[in-house]
Length: 252
Image (cartoon, rainbow, N blue to C red; front, top):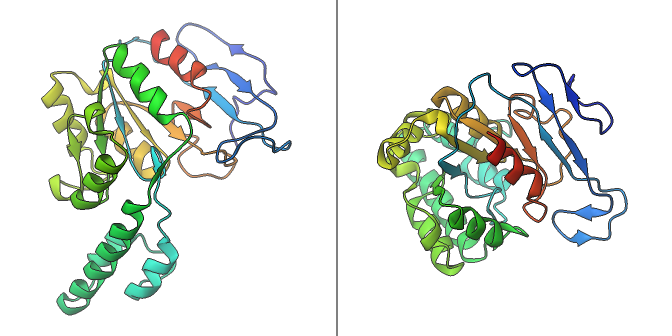
């Protein structure tokens, strides 16, 4: 239960307490645009730290955040022989050498197909351009393979927006915060001066462990019961409606 949701009102206690903002746009479906009348995107700026920091960079997860690559994780787990509740990379780490080689082949095959057909979520390209024009650095931090990420960036012409791009081959995978620290070192900034944006609880936990602010991209899913949303500093439903997020970034 989130104690800061109050039916759309703005709740402020003090400069050091939690500030909650709720913005709703009826009839918007983040996957299809306007038209679904029961869809109500929400944007929550839930936590303001006592010491305000200027944001100098944004780190994004890729699949499920910037692009929809249509990966079928249940099918991948099934073909690998993993349990339905296992995370794929963690599950692979427990396999014997023979099974691990087979599992890697399964994952690479699925990632190659999905990368070739990946599509940007609505509003992402314009958002990335606007953030770049404001002088903020942008990076990608993903559990996907380098080869699949490079395919996505090339096909969708996104390379110019991101430096660096870190994949699972580049260091400990999320939720280990090491790679966020690597990005901060590259940029010459502190973790408190960056934001981690992702659609999965591990993105939020990684940002928190690194000392960064966090944005959970819900993709229009209900935040109730969605792991990681209560811990995130901001909930974003769609990049097509970025004004609350841009204001939150500026206010920080």
